[in-house]
Length: 457
Image 1 (tube, rainbow, N blue to C red):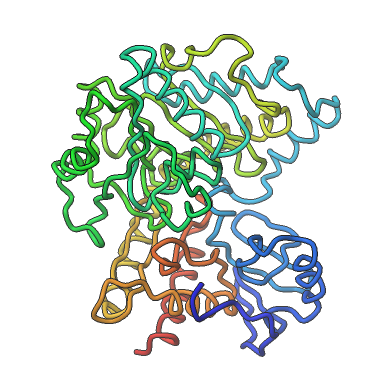
Image 2: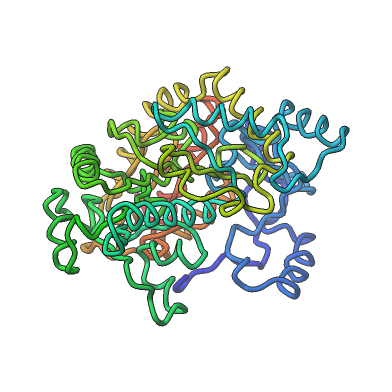
């Protein structure tokens, strides 16, 4: 990240002691430095880069260290902890699995696996009633790409193999997921890109002001392909680097085009799913019916698990034993996911996210307007939002300002993950869906105060 990194030199910061935040030490905590040194010795540098605090425990919307500090969490472990951290119901479900004991099953059946598959299928549109459980979001997107291409090739011939995705897209860190990704900087290691992956401009309305679906068709044509060549289109329901949302009209036209041309529409809901945007899945805002849905993160609010949900005729393309995963439906993550979905539905947290959008959205818009020279855009829906920091008079990202604001928030007891996307210039906001309204307002006051200290005014 250019020019500005989190300091590992402890600095004196004002003491904080409020209902949701408490800072009683220098930041970072001097006693924590040996752990960072140990991690630096034994881990690759790629694992560095998040705010320098050492998590000891996390409860609901708060994160605690061992030295008396308490942060209001706006990270949700990067969109994982939708129902809050450390839910007792999930802990109890895990203890029951441990007490059996049942820790691993490969692909041998267990009862909770069938329960979770049914629960997920019932959340999806009719006819999307097959569920393939996996471990990571990358696995989900890889398998969705594989299924879409298999469907196109087997049904229409080997010419229909192209996978279309979008500039700025992130679908994971494995080979196929990064081929479908839209960030060239993440692909330099590939050297010789695999054929059949093309990216078209994402209609975010800020960097790319053309939000017409005609741009999709022109871009595809420029790559030398027509609908007869395209096996699948994959897109995040909102791009995680923003969040950048698809314009509603564009999404609907994309869905209609895919249906007309028998193109598999894959919606990547790994970040966006399970109530985050005020709908169970973000694609519901667009009145879309995807053919395949990629899920992860918020599926369990805790342990690693992911899924592909989709049409029978696509999901059943592979014979028994030929599309599996060693830890598919592993008992502990499945137990966590089942309990997570029960809580999400019982407490109607999807509606809670929609209601709190009325607090988060206007506040972010107001902050953006106040600092419009430095904040190019505010994006938000439900309980996910972002502020794009720009260099005044341009649309160029300003990662230094983004990280400086992030660090100020950290010192005041508001925790976010490191600025993402847009050249590291996006401050991303993603609290647990359980966050009390007064806590959300408290965090917004800290964010605005930090903007004032960094940007002036």
